[in-house]
Length: 158
Length: 305
Image (cartoon, rainbow over all chains, first blue to last red; front, side):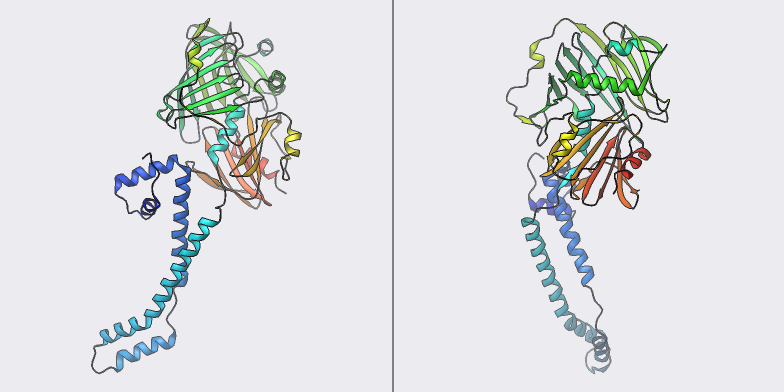
């Protein structure tokens, strides 16, 4: 893959939604392109943030609501207990689901804008530090193609 | 890169770099036209195949065919004869050369030495030189426990009177990019520290014989980074310092957590080189060197406040 993947393709890669050959090609591109690799990492961070928000947002049903569900299950003379329980739970949870979805969308919007407008924390590549070290250490004595000075040769202990 | 002033040659070199768990081998052809033109072109590994470096004096051009770019870098210290003299003075101050059995390499009679650390008594390097030209034909580096760390040898060597100029020409049509954001390495450590732009810390401990040799300032992702290079003439150590706690990407490296005092740090190795990275009081530090982890940890501890 010589062209950069689109944001949609990166998103599919993060969520393992690509066919194997496309997945391999995108993965190989990340090995060569630090810019696209950074976009991939941002997508992963957003996904993790949403997941952790979702987990943090799960809550117990209030005790009074649990009690009213049980009452509904036992009181209704016409509907079966399972149908009544389903209807009651659906009605009770509908506002909670709506709130959670709205909150997730708000978080996605905020973090998406945050990622666009705020520069991500700078990253150094360890490989560049190794390269800088090698660059300077290559000037040390006995680098490839070096010549031993006569002074050292004369100084040898036999 | 150092190069013989009066000897021109062509040859093939094999290098082996031995890490904690795996080794890397590279094979390249080398052509040198005295005094200061050198071409290296890689046969192995596959990732470097057909990559070429051309050195003209103190300037090296790395020709990356896969990326269709030429990267130019300059070593200001490379044309500094007093600095090279200092390098060998440092070496002889810390290492004693001892004659060892020689032999021949590709028909060339050799003189061989072991470099013995004067402070520890360890053999750090064995060198086989051409008895006539003094060119290093074979070299082996050893860790302090005697394990082989790296080796290099000429598989073949031929001395020549001249070489075609076209061998050292840059390819047409490829953009030349300066190695970005780096000032040239220099020997004036005091000036570098003074102009770093942030409080620089000096290690209070270094292995015996190590001295600061040179350094440079660079901008990485807009963050100023000071690189100080220490050596005892054979072994080397780099210390990178930068303000803030910038994230260090260890992509492609196997890492493990370590502790420096009460600070969390991360250790990785590449071939015989170890890397130790941590942050302390708003400064990021990275050590890279051909030293054991214990020595790196001791140096790191001496940098803590």
